[in-house]
Image (cartoon, rainbow, N blue to C red; front, side, top):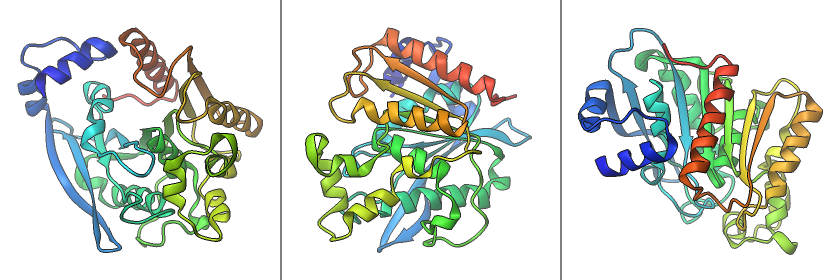
Length: 291
């Protein structure tokens, strides 16, 4: 783990080099793994919480949602994406959700909204600033970051976990997320992972529309940062282009970072330095920094 962390440091440029990084991390953060935030369909959804030990005041907090086409991936596998935020002094909540083999759509969207509600209900106990919540994810996780940040309670997708009102996130950082689920179910952009997630329900088109971020773009949404490679073979680059156009039309603040020739993630160290620099500038512009 230490070698992996140090390699990411070199790649992202986000961390100060240190031969005692693991010890410093342990001294700086209390880690609470595998907290159950929701039981649904007999499945225990869990999250990992990284909380600053020295924090006396509520801290900006990252909510990370892993990718994997709604059919695979783990919260542990996406840990490298949260490291730059830990270095910045943020708290982090790393969320898992039901994959298609456990429950098909809309389960993943419901779970992530319930994770957001858990954070709202437990914020005070963990020094989480509900006014400085940033949700991020890559691929299907990017889609879920968008749905978590923009779907209103009136959509009824949070009914698995009634409780405190859903907190409003302060910003969304979307790494090549799906924005139009129906586009991936048929035609030239058909993707097997999307078909597996939606299954063969006769109303799958209606469900897909209900779960598509483009359907919820409206004025007053939190600012959105979009990152996408323009040669992505897994999630069409046009999904981000269309999201950018919709956000602009609605007057929602946004930044769009295109990685020229970039595939589905796996960006070079030099590209990651630029991406994380852009993210940090975006967050600073929104007043989202740690003390």
